[in-house]
Image (cartoon, rainbow, N blue to C red; front, side, top):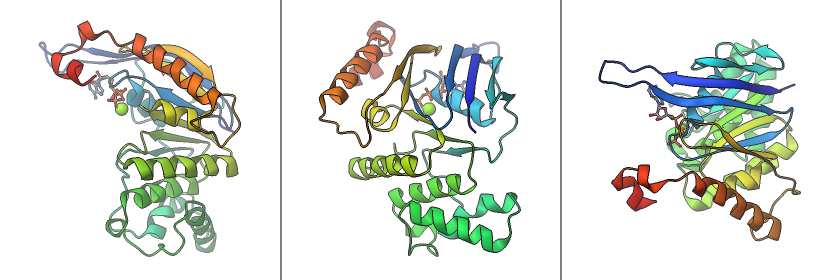
Amino acid sequence: MGVLQVQNVVKIYPGHSASDEPVKALANVSFTVHNNEFCSILGHSGCGKTTLLNIMAGFDSATLGRITLDGKPIGPPGWERAMIFQDYALFPWLTVVGNVSFGLKTKKLPPDEQQRLAQRQIELVGLKGFENRYPHQLSGGMRQRVAIARALAVDPSVLLMDEPFAALDAQNRSMLQDEMVRIFMEQQKTMVLVTHSIEEAIKLSDRIIVMTRRPGRVKADIVVDMPRPRLEESPAFVAMKARIRDLIHDEFDLTEVPAAQASQA
Ligand SMILES: Nc1ncnc2c1ncn2[C@@H]1O[C@H](COP(=O)(O)OP(=O)(O)OP(=O)(O)O)[C@@H](O)[C@H]1O
Ligand SMILES: [Mg+2]
């Protein structure tokens, strides 16, 4: 199972000195990610997306409110909540198969079972033949495939992803999004993706949570009811993109943005 319930989560980062004001990153965030659902979290930079994912993973704790997995409050980081980061975070001293089977060691499975599960994930992400390469011998896209395989190998209840494709060039990004759709269809699993990209969210998700600006709250909870794979040119896709873009633009009050950022917006 993998039902993730976010209940009235507030996060305030305390200031470190008298001149350093506390930062309210999240204000009363509530939503549920259902079992085997792909849920994306969309919002402007600084609205608290990573903060929320870190709390889900157990790397940080909520100031108020709680998050449960299958009804139980989440504890410290564990294999049942696997995380994929933007910057791959592979172990450089381990090969592809070493990285992918790393988490399996903590599950104390027999070596041949570890090998079999690792190999299956390596094939699933299209890296057959690269088992004995080291991360520095791989492209960015291939490294992120290893990170995906490593996260899935332990068969987590929930897969958490923080902008996993952001460091890739447009072509690789699009390819890996397509692969993620295929992986999701093959291995139904509860997945939470943080992204800045409206297209990415629509391409991948069953549900999209649109956040307000900081302090982040849920601005909209949108069901994406389109068959996969989804074509960006389809009328339903285009309409949803416009709807979400409007919701996000509404949040952008240029008068409150520092000049340097406003000129890029
Ligand atoms: N450890 C921390 N200590 C103090 N403030 C923090 C800390 N981590 C994040 N913040 C602040 O909390 C707010 C939310 O940050 P967070 O990283 O969650 O945003 P985000 O939505 O992931 O942004 P981005 O899209 O740029 O990654 C920001 O104002 C940030 O400066
Ligand atoms: Mg972030």
